[in-house]
Image (cartoon, rainbow, N blue to C red; front, top):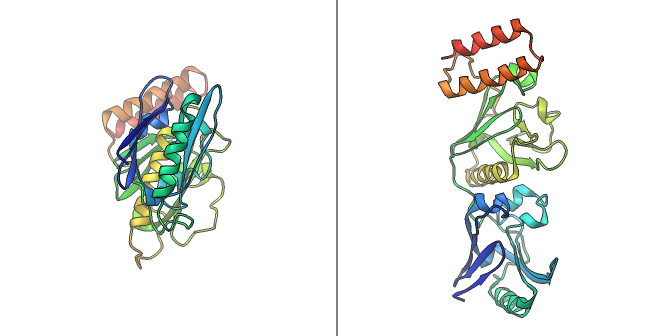
Length: 291
């Protein structure tokens, strides 16, 4: 196509085999768009295109990806708010005819399998390394394994006793993401051999981190979930035995910045009266011993 269509939050560049979506930055832009930056969507990854009336004098051009084509949308599982949908382009209402023109162009470019689920991911997820802070721990993904490091101030006793966790991609069957904008938001790793099962509440499950106010926001936790899911789908099936939880020794050295951050958290709890003098002193000494 070789044309460009600019909307309020993004610019769509139509190329011969794909549409490149460039998300604009700004204070009023959805943080998820800013985190994504840009995304290339092959036409064969789309199932349909439509134009509809928007709010307050706008028109919306929206493409729908094929099921399984985009790891981000697969992880989101319909939980994104309308304004945070990366496949929506909002335009002034006077551009309706232009939006309909490009919708027709996109429909003509759809692949012959548009009505069927995609056999594999066709849209790239954000690249690792990725990390974010959940309410009860820090989640990290280096491309080959997911690690959970528990926060003493937020993790349940069950998680704290289990020790910090590390899950190789080959040990996983999928990812369950529940938006932090709803009750009981969390990111749970589905281990091979446990599909369809639940290991209790997420705040008690060592294979999950839970979200809270300011912890695990959509623009951090969803791209993380998408990257892990894409790596899992790309991982060849192995005959390795089912993983058993492994406790990571607490003797592992922490860097000074992490220790300082955790001591600061303890200090806040102490000042708020949630820790006694003895509890604060004991835990502070334990943390300093890890340096």
